[in-house]
Image (tube, rainbow, N blue to C red; front, side):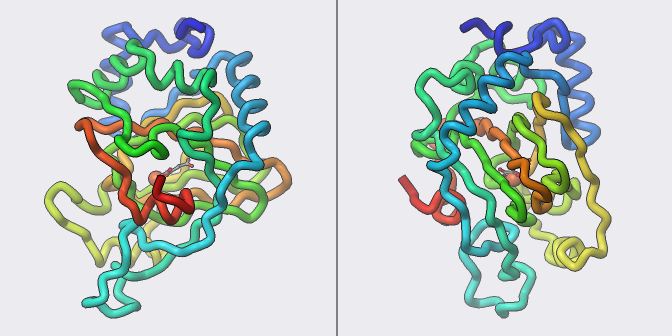
Length: 259
Ligand SMILES: O=C(O)CCC(=O)C(=O)O
Ligand SMILES: [Fe+2]
């Protein structure tokens, strides 16, 4: 299957210099880039069917986690913001459960797609996660399920919304809330966010939209789904360096296993 049967390249000419420049500018300015109608309608329909077919394999998170996706720090009080627990209940299937012939694998590996991402992200090359679970995930959020506030392990993430619920399921974020590269955790800012004293930005997108976001320093969450249409969302995860694994605590929380 060629890339143009997966991606609407008329609307989103991934190899075009000015398209790349505009995309990079949007990402740098907003911390998020949303390309609507990215997936070709037939591919979107095939991916919804694929997600549905494999829904019964999903693991649903049931433990809590801190926003940094790390184990608690015993030296800090249990009510310290570092140790504050939030709830994630969404389900997920991992890379090793994504179908061998899925268009998601073709998109993930396509040189022209990766070259576009590199140009927009300012990376030299992209590498899959070194663990067998984390590169391609499909998330499932039926009624009442959510993804709690967190910062990503990875610098950036790419998502594709496949199916949008009637209500809820909204992606919300607060940009530049910490500076992980400088070791700045910004406990005061995170506490303000968790207490609802900072107004998050909401991103309202339609199925078939590709979203690229820098989630390492932006606090973000997905609100609980309302109604009986399950939210289906794909995450395509890459790293700027080879050999990186998702942390074991994050894998345990979201996959229920580490391998
Ligand atoms: O479901 C989404 O839109 C965002 C997913 C996300 O933040 C994550 O997988 O870390
Ligand atoms: Fe995230």
